Image 1 (cartoon, rainbow, N blue to C red):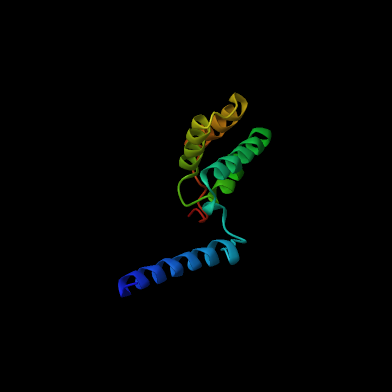
Image 2 (image 1 turned 120 degrees about the vertical axis):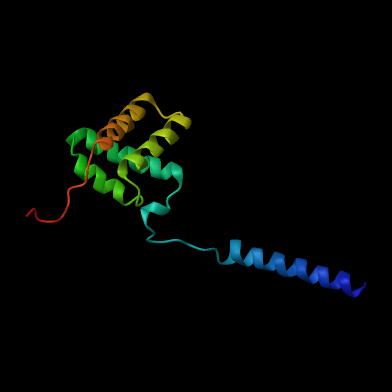
Length: 118
């Protein structure tokens, strides 16, 4: 075998060993991550839970706070993204109605400023 063949075989073996180690022996385990790192389907499930709570208490401020942990975007945009995903994933009509209700309420919601009025 020529030097090039030995070199390529060793590269392939090293790559294979690295993949086995990284994927099988010692894979990365995420713990205590923030909800903004969730996949789109889990984000939508979280949104649906927030929409169910909103449906029960009609408190837009609480709903916006719940959605605030999903990212720095305006909660109405986060709700619209979840509604879009739910429509594409063929969620039941009752779930779509809950998400739509929350998204509609958040469109006009404005955060309360923390400052004191003069």
